[in-house]
Image (tube, rainbow over all chains, first blue to last red):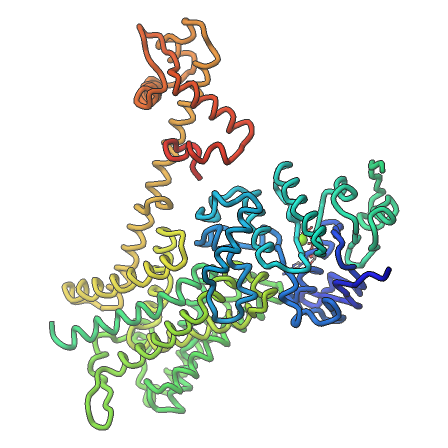
Length: 245
Length: 386
Ligand SMILES: Nc1ncnc2c1ncn2[C@@H]1O[C@H](COP(=O)(O)OP(=O)(O)OP(=O)(O)O)[C@@H](O)[C@H]1O
Ligand SMILES: [Mg+2]
């Protein structure tokens, strides 16, 4: 059976101030996988996602989403940025942040209405944050802020989800709650791509993995390629994972 | 009030509103310094524009000068991008350079340009009513009023149209970009509006007041609300309030109007900074004190819960045991009594049912850190707020 390719990256090179931080990346992400991107700090994981989403302009290479350029496929893609990338003191509420997920389908100038509000409330409910809907966002804990971001992505009702470290600074309960939502998304046929740091949980949470460190080291099913060899190549040190299948 | 007085206040108020709107977003984007840079570096643009148009109020001059403002922003970003210096340093490099070019141009052409550096910095609001606009011979009011009025109408129109885009790109530029709202476009749009407002306002109120009117009302409003729309509204109210009170202050002292308005802005910010209900200095200090007392209260209640022996629960013993100063133990005892958490019988302290329940809940909270449990306790207990 030939699987559809959700995201295809060709010869992608991205640089900040002419210093390349991603070299010549080729990547194919099949539809319906729950994929981890792993690699050390500064490996370019966030940069890769930003380049795929058109937030950064690559100096070479191209990206396609279901065989079309990203600009044509925005409505198919949802994004959860790294939590530290926004100012949590911004004067707004949890509900309002989630509503921002609906802005894409509204387009320029048009304002969100009752329909968008209802969708946002449903997403808040799904991540267990409904009681906090009117809370100013700085008065939420780190894990709650992460759930708000997740709800904002859910409200986009996309086919492909990119999440930059959604487990950063969350406790075990929240982590399980989030991973269950991600698994549900996959069950619904969505493709989910997650930057992930905890190598121990990769086999348990994900079915697909990409090793990244400036270059792409490997990509494929977790059961085939998640091994000491690739980990050592990615992290530089002699890596021994104590994971038994 | 004479006509001129009303006109001056009207101009000052419109300037205040036109500045507060972009100012709110500049403050939220932590770009307060940029408005300072723009307000100074538009000077060469104004001079060049004046050579071309020979009219300080021409719309072309305003656009030319505003372009200098946007160029400033681009230059600052270019310098910053080299990674050699930080943003504030880049700003510090660009605007004095441009401003001094402007000053030299004025000095060199003093005879042709009716501009002087004092007027650039402080404006000439008092004279604004004398420069009138005539449409086919009829006097329709001061020129500055028309200029700033038009700019304000455009600004408000843009704000209403692009409120959602401004909000999302200010809060989360990455999301905005991925949704297809170009943050760069919005950024330069905001810079253009700020520049146009600055140029339009500067003839009347000068560079310093423009910066003050952009930043101070927004910064004050930021301390008072957690809602972007309310922040905009408050910033506008503060701006207008300072403009009018500043005018009368100047009238009373016979001083510079721009200077007085700036002073009022400063006073207003100081008051808000001290007395804002939740983010103000006094509120923060009060809250910290409350929290200290409540931590003590909790320690005290826990002690009672853990000890059944009467000796451990004697008032005198508590003083020593928990090792507080007399004042503190009295405050804590009073607080506990007032909330019906304890009873004192013959100098022996015991938990009431309510106190016992409260303590268990609090322990639960501390151990599990579950937010749901704490939601109902929040209202009557400071410790768990924020
Ligand atoms: N805005 C920027 N300007 C210049 N260099 C940058 C910028 N953002 C990232 N970099 C550099 O690019 C490299 C890759 O950064 P990136 O944020 O993609 O790493 P990452 O893999 O996501 O790391 P982390 O695990 O810490 O989130 C790093 O060396 C970083 O210093
Ligand atoms: Mg990252």
